[in-house]
Length: 311
Image 1 (tube, rainbow, N blue to C red):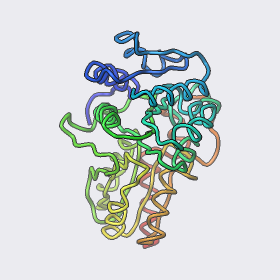
Image 2 (tube, helix red, strand yellow; image 1 turned 180 degrees about the vertical axis):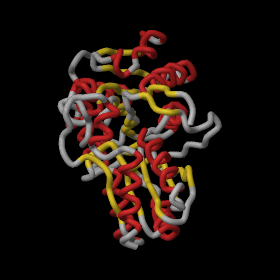
Image 3 (cartoon, one colour; image 1 turned 120 degrees about the vertical axis):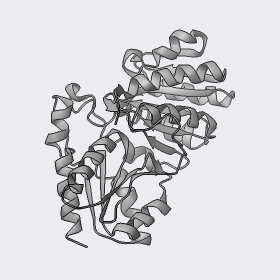
Image 4 (cartoon, helix red, strand yellow; image 1 turned 30 degrees about the vertical axis):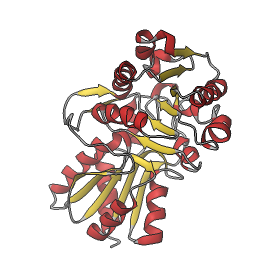
């Protein structure tokens, strides 16, 4: 794994690059441009950038209007506020009418660590995953972030893009292939599968390295598209290893773990463990919170050993 780059910085740079290539891209912001980094786009294209103030519901509603006129709006605010304060128009305007709006929720999971539970987004996936027509994507590093920003512009229909505030090691090379709806197997093994989404990918890879020291070979999957989930890949992993652990910086209810469990229950039941939030977290250092709430490589490896015993 390479240098550390903040996901939000990679997003802002990619949005500016996309805006230079596509004049139909517009940016909307809820007065947190320095946080979401959409301001990078705004400074380059002020005529296509709209800061609506702290009014997420109105911002999302405006995006529906832009989409109706043939523009491609990228809507920016904290994930927790996008999916709570903007919930009504996301469902009733954008998803219901299948509009071409890209909802970009940053500071996801525990990454807004020092602002505490009011700003930490651990329920956003459960909301957006349940809405018809809405595609859901979460990115793991800076390269995948850029790929996703461009892929969303080519994808016709509403998308929720989940972005972290945090720095993450760059895992992917610039020529990586990113396809909406297609997970990526980043490591292969025959004993257990770890399916992740978002920046915890690098924690899963470190856990796999710990397990390898004991002779345990783990498959690691980056399931960047949570909806539609790559059912074929989940089934393939279940057949290949017979045990699955999901890791997500989100509640264990309604997110990646739930999506994987649904596939397994319907097609290939195998022992499964879920790593994710079970309660609200407090303010504190991001890495310390990840350790406390079970996202460390050691904790992931422990879950893998536990699920293997159930095979």
